[in-house]
Length: 361
Image 1 (cartoon, helix red, strand yellow):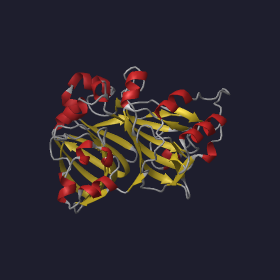
Image 2: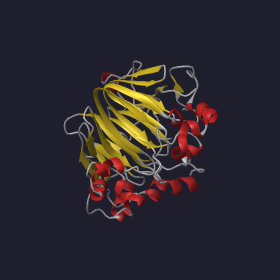
Image 3: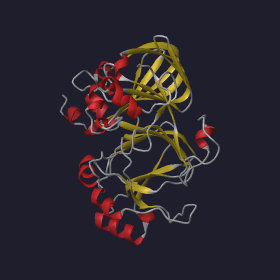
Image 4: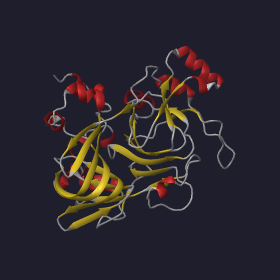
């Protein structure tokens, strides 16, 4: 039975977490929470359904049960989609700074990590203290040799590029980009369905048992890109009257749009694609037939491809993630709104790297 599903969050209590997700409205247990995994089918971290007749079943079971009716064509043929959901969704509370790290791309991960997917990701900044910043790439003028030497000597402060961020910013992190969330930031993270992380530096911190988390310098040096990429993007907005849609990311791994609705109701067609909505603020209602699903702040809703159509209403802001069928008119709404291909490449994260956009006239 296909209908809109709400997922049960999987909470992680890593040492850099805090209490900010609960402060922002997340229904969460007491204690330190570093991450809330909202959509995942990695072994041991399978998301579970929270509502309806499928309540208590995990997403991997539903994919096995429904196949393409659940994932659709585009998500189902992706590298991750052959094994589970096509992307992993999280909320992150960087109450303290995260480790400095890098992720491999698909090719490296396939050959060196037993056929796993690589990890390109994006952050949507939900909350940030004044002067909060991230690390993204390296300071201009640093050569690869100087960077390697500084890392080996533990001289990390001198080599990374710091970028100030604020609420609503979009940060794009292609595989190979060295990065870190610094303290005082809460973010929604959308990433490839992979948990591969090569830690470069962890500030010599120890866990509750007095142990330092391992570093992975050899593999990190295999995958690091020394060419800085554009870190932040504005996106492109389409005003639909009672609601606005802002295109944030266009990539082969995931498309992300921000929805802002103001009490209206719209009919949504799945077009054979698998969709998710991370509700950032407010409350949304998803309706299909007699099914009604209400979702509030920092909850996540899954829409299977075979649902075909449903209705959304409410006053809320949400991140909508999907993988479209690129044989169709995926860019049509942006082009019809008057945006040029150059504007799409410049303002939407990931778009400049996509071959189908590079080749578009």
